[in-house]
Amino acid sequence: MSIAYDSKIVVSRYKHLQARLVCYTAEHRFFATRTSPTVLNDSFIMTTTLPDIMPAVLKEANCSLPLSLTASVNRNGAVTLTVNPYTTSSADSPFFDAITKNLNQSFPVGDNPFQVFREAATSVELLMHNLPLSIQPHEPSYLVPSFLESISNAIDVPIFGARFLQPDPAKGVKKRTTSVVVAVDPPLVSRFSESIRPFSCACMVSPAYSASKSTQSRKCWRFGHSARLCKEEAKACPICTLLHHRSAHRCANQSCPNVGFEYSVVGCCNASPPLCINCGGQYASFDGTCHIHRKVLCVLRPPRDQDIPNARYTGLS
Image (cartoon, rainbow, N blue to C red; front, side):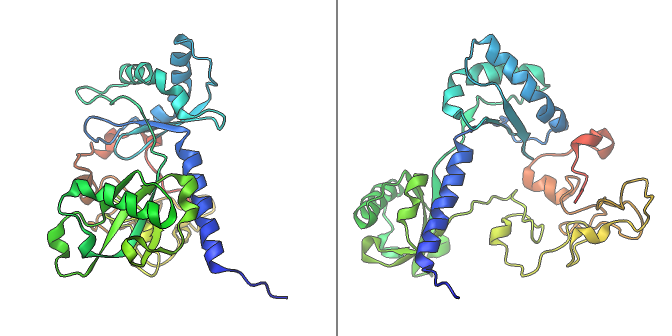
């Protein structure tokens, strides 16, 4: 017995579920960035100690909210704290100043302190394709009002922001259409179908996946785009750049002292030497030692012998 599915309904429900997941995770997170993005050597120590340090700060401030939280540190040195599912980040916002002060006092930050914690954005970005260039306003400040009115008239959904996918008009002079990224409230994403007709023009709609120069694709392991936007057909091995799974680098020696028989440990033996796809160095493509990696982050990573062993990504599969 075959079951027929309406593709538009499936896509709509998928977008709605995706938006709910984004909203759920974002509304429980708040983060603090460094004044200047910097790789942290003590990131492992921070992620393991902050869940105990921060509750002490909240207790001292007479906070009556649940104290459980988790911490993470990204490659730019930004700290993200996630509270439990029954507490939103906005409830902790009165304590952001005290938490930030304690964070800067608990770890060596020098002249590059953490900025005050902020709530994670809860809006969802959607990409609208095939919009005629004629709708492009003369002033960038007119973009949001014009799209706010047109989208509201088309599907009765307000937007919080809008920007051109390609911000440089000179790069699109030879094109007939353009793409615009709009920010909407997650529960309202389901009202967008695969295409809508603002400005009396049919345009395709899809989720927008942000990427920066420091974004590394987990498909080809190069910088500047995410895996979702990667144009490579096959996934490359992050350890040696060949087209196989990283598990192929598990050591054949069952008594491997580096536990290479159980996990894909980078460079555990001469049989599987690592190779960086970005610079050709003798280390994995995700290793922060790569000079291309350091360049896109605009920071200089200290020598490897100064690293904290447990803080570095070991390449376990």
